[in-house]
Length: 170
Image (spheres, one colour):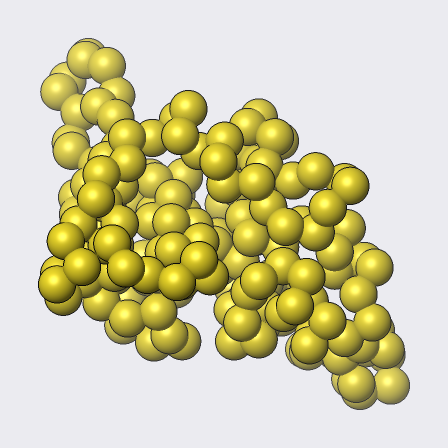
């Protein structure tokens, strides 16, 4: 699970850039255009998305993160790919990160952390508080169940004994 100080970094980013509106259950990723440089990858690219954070020079400014997203993705795939790559940026994962598949496949710690950050970015807390079950969350947040299950609150709920879990996780 994403460490608490890293979760807090994601929540602080969400608040600073107004990504979660209490009037809707869908995160406003359009705000990210003010923070990151987005570029297009050709539809034939083997990667869904790619982010790059160069190493800063000593005592120099922090270089901007560039996020590349493949053309031809569905709306939902595009949102997940962007949120995943933004997760790398928020968590200060240096270097380059290529997303070859939008699926619950975590081959490194950085990848799992980026997916967990993506879940937090895509699913407003009030949606989880209001939700009767995971299928409803899938529909209103445009997020698949496997990614909803990466949300730290959901992981904590599943770690509880069955009788003490919130109703939606029984």
